[in-house]
Image 1: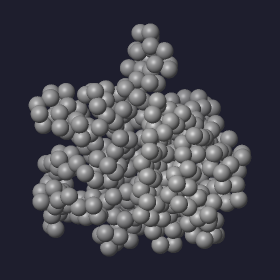
Image 2: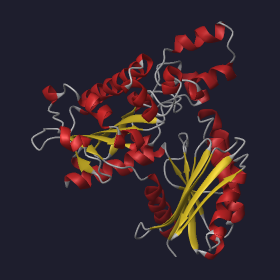
Image 3: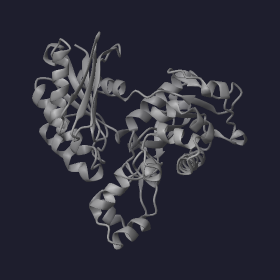
Length: 395
């Protein structure tokens, strides 16, 4: 048996795939979304079967039950599929979880205890883990942590300049996120260039509803834009990205309480705060029709990306490749062009035709004579989670 059920729980969704770990074949996949809303939705693919249902999913426990029902409705219950293990994506592992980890009761409780560092994600992970372990008690469950890849950052990159005792007491440091994506994308970029990852200086731009940049030297993360929480760094769908801490103090002193501030920064900021929509496609369409707020939002987004790009060029001492990935990075040719504009001095020459081509596979979008290879590489966190889970249980 080499089938791994990968469970990727977001704050209001569960993405899942059943993957043959040895061949990476997708045996089944699906998405439960709008968890906690009045009406949720599940989409399930299994062989020739495709199921789409509107169901009420008040929490991630109910969402996982919906996943099990979908497998059964498609003709084969999950218990009959000979699942070898379940791999769970976990956003925040703190400083203690630095590798894939077999989930015990104690590990599950520690994941929940780290919720203060990832309030939108770790509680959801914990609920899904508890539900999955109850449904599949006879197979190993493995946690694969987004933060683990960034444990290679040097102290000067992860240390904040605050009182060291306060920082130690409360675990305040840069952890970084999207590590699973940055890892798999950097490896695939190296394969595309036919070079060992150990020889490359890479800047990976994971641009989706959540967004982060990562400087990768020889396959190791040396800096990343997200910090203590996934709030820091680039402009995102609903998250603010970088913000003067003094602005937070100002809002608190002006009468906003902590919970209101949390909702503002996590749920009402970013593209949504600037334009009223967190979907980059909507923002692009509005900008194209002349909406000034949408145009400004795109300019703010590009400026933030380029600021980190410049910082990481210095941190790496130059770059061999710049890699775009995730939903926006893989599909928004105009954004890629704006990020790479006027960088010929650095050796970046984008090929407009390659950049505009709508191709799903990993590809080069810079010219053949560009000193820095600019790539688009689709991310595949689920395949990486399956791989790490399989390696742990077969070691």
